[in-house]
Length: 222
Image (cartoon, rainbow, N blue to C red; front, side, top):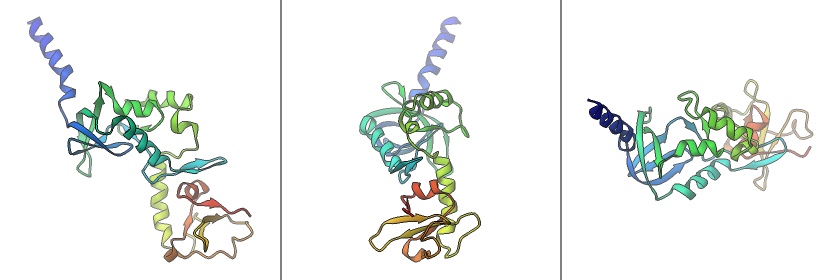
């Protein structure tokens, strides 16, 4: 009986490595992989969107989303992984934990400061994120808006982008100059009153300075 129980425990321990997609990896973004041709959303983590910019507090905007994707590509692209399926999301993607050389890819991303613990769905990586934040690893050493906050701001901006008048609470003017520079103007700045917003030209309203910087705009000099 003990031998049967021991064998069953060993079988369960081995099961996570074969319960989901397996094969060569192609990195889609910081938390999405193609594993053996199957799209996999890594469970319990949230990485910056590919088009997300970080910065703020005196730091210039920089493309943190594409940086995280490229970092992950550097050590995972083309290698063989095994995944344990946890769920399927509303987009039909497999949600899974994936392992490279026995290491949890999601945990490594959070521990290195390249992604956040997605506490809405799991607390598995809560302590890993706290350790990265305390030690200023990766994104935690720079100005960073969480991916969830970035998505919320993008939805607000999407609604504001098609307006030629300021929506409630969104009074920052995102102007595009004749030479293509993206400059935002704050109320009280010298050119604020003269600046007109033309959504047809790609100009837009912003609800906060961090939102404007993350979208790639810089503050007007005066």
